[in-house]
Length: 222
Image (tube, rainbow, N blue to C red; front, side):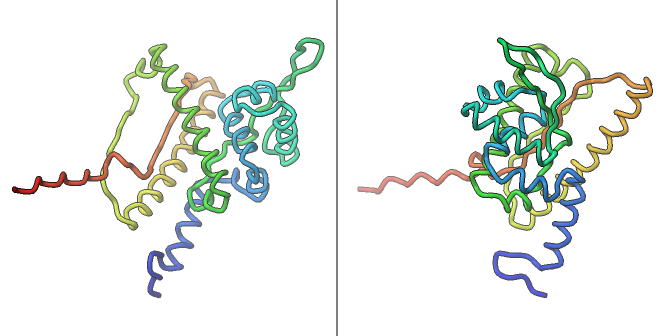
């Protein structure tokens, strides 16, 4: 079947959707899609995927009202996307701390089902957390303390097919990386491996810097 202009064959669409879904794993389901129906919940879940936090801490980091944050924390808890891990007395009250129940990965095809504001909230929070992680790691010398770190950047120009192929490769990498983490967790639990805090980041995005600058107009001869 011929692809529509600007589109792709249905078979290819189904293949990409299936592979992306498999790469995402069980974390992506109907509960998640409903849980991500509000931009603030996306921000909360993004933070709680990275670390434990209380509604009060989330309110300060996300610069949102405490009552709003507390409400959406409850919604995420009702959807079983987060869990309370501990409580702590604080100024005559009890502060509750939460963390994400499972790691969340949303491939771009599923992100597109969300409102544009939700999409930007999701990846903006990830980028903010990533920047903070990298800066702290560099400042403390943790970033390159070991010899097996990886830093790579490859700006260039792709076409529609190339971007789709790159997205598939990214999904495959993330699926394999989750397997590696699971295997490492099993070895650590058995006392056979050393726990090493590690962050893996993968970005594929439309670059403005790689665009060819417009040629300067030649001055007219008088």
